[in-house]
Length: 162
Image (cartoon, rainbow, N blue to C red; front, side, top):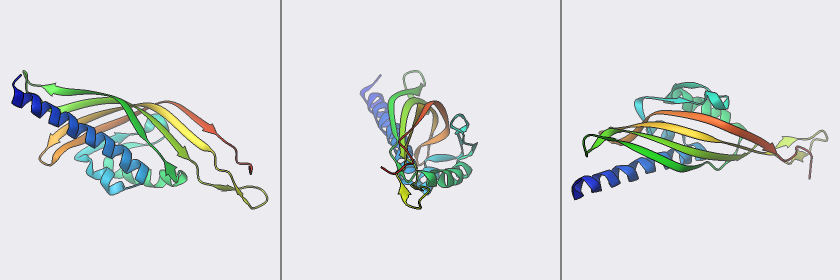
C-alpha cells in the first residue's frame, strides 16, 4: 500500500466516523433534516427491533420526529465502532460497513400525578448494536442502510413525586 493510498484510507475512515457521529447528534438534537441529509437518496432505516418502523430514511425521520417527542432529553452514544472498508486489491473502494454498539439513555416527558402536580419523569435506556452500510457519493460518504438491533431496555425512576 502506497503512502497516498494509506492516507486516502485514513481520510475515508475519518469521514465515515463523522457520518456515524452526525447520525447520533441528529437523533439527539432532533435535527431531522440533518438526519435525512446523512442518507443516500435511496437510503433506508430499520428500527423494528426497537419497536419502530422500517422504510425510506425520509419516512423514518418523520416517525422519529413524532416518537422522540416522548423523550425531550436524549444522549445517544455510539461506541466500539468496527469499520470494514471495501478493499479493491489494496485500494479503498466505495462501500463500507460499520458495526457499532449503542447506549441510548433518555428522559421521558414529565407527567402529572393524581393530584395535578408534575411528577418526576423516569429515565429510559436501551442498548444494542447498529449495522450501517455506507456508500461514497459525489458529496461524500452517506448511509445507505442502518439497522438497529436492540439487545436490552430499562425503565428506572418513578412517576410519583420525589
